[in-house]
Image 1 (tube, rainbow, N blue to C red):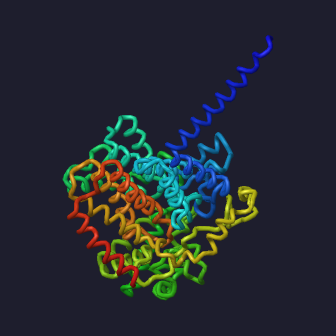
Image 2 (image 1 turned 90 degrees about the vertical axis):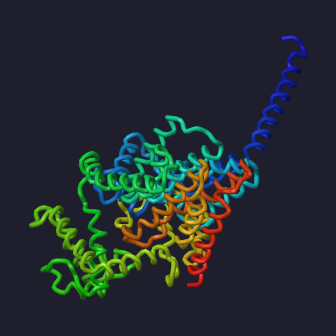
Image 3 (image 1 turned 90 degrees about the horizontal axis):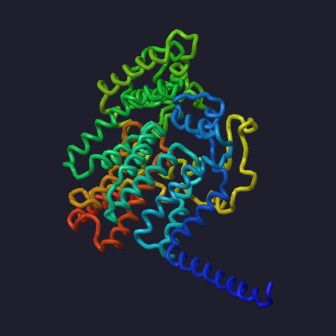
Length: 503
């Protein structure tokens, strides 16, 4: 080798290094939003690995592991986790499934505002505001539903803001995700059906046609859920509908003073138990696992359909449905008082403070609270991040933004503001707001517990609507809705908000 040949190589190295640094600097300058969100994603995944899998989600994991597929929890989710476990036993995968869509959806919608530092900081703050942070790494049916509806809705709004046409691939992939969400939660169709209808039929049809179409699809999903669970997914019938039926029958009896249940040999005085044990907060106090003496007697009777018994699940179901219909027909006022009382407690709207269970669990890792030393129980292998410990020490139950009615009113504001509009973005914003709103309103009829986690999908969609409105203004220099509809929306939602705060 001739002397001096290595000198140009050194210069080339310096030049290449400088070029790489310039590319990195240029990339960051135009993608601070992505950088900030990626760092937040890594932080959440690293410090809270493998997420929180406890109670309901641990039961799903246990059922998938032991191939015990029932329909008390989501049979579809059990089968999907079973499929994952066939290929890997990396437990953090279940956290990734929900964390990636949330962060990706946040990036997709927020980049319409800007890709700069300020937007990146705002998005990171969104991930860490208490009501979002409370469940973002807690693996639940609710958080799965929230993550995927958030991503699909963000993609739909992004395309509407940028005037991009929906491709066939996008529609097919989105439809698959939304259909899967039908069966992730028993009421998942309420939030996903409007998005699916808007995806294929459009949301520019007259209002009556939109809602009739949504209602028909929802009824079809409800009618076929049992077939999908029991026949297609081969799940065991664990009577998940019994909880709602018993809760409504007992709640109506508590308000009317008359039980419509047939005589039960092991429960000679039904009304005594109903008066002592019923609360509109949740059905758990009268469930078959209720802790109080004799409070579980009625539920235990109907959940005892295990061979060999005199009555099957189908016979018990017919008996309960008859009692349920009789209660509604003969005591409609008592039934609606029961349902409205529960819905008010769920929304945390009037006269109910503090918020009920804003944190689902404080434990990290996979934990079976029925057997903390069981073979599937594990922890994350390290202490929980200090930020989580400090977070738990704050007075979360009295924080206003944990009240689900706040999310409902935000969604109602955007829904009313965009109701009488005629452009693609406002239609899309309207359907997203409607989806989140109707999902929460659905708990008026199907809710059985007032846990904060049930409102999580609507919470994320309310935040999405706010970000989409800023993104639309940033790109088009136009405000969502019309001046008249915004005034009407504000005149409705602001007084409702003030009433909720004062009372």
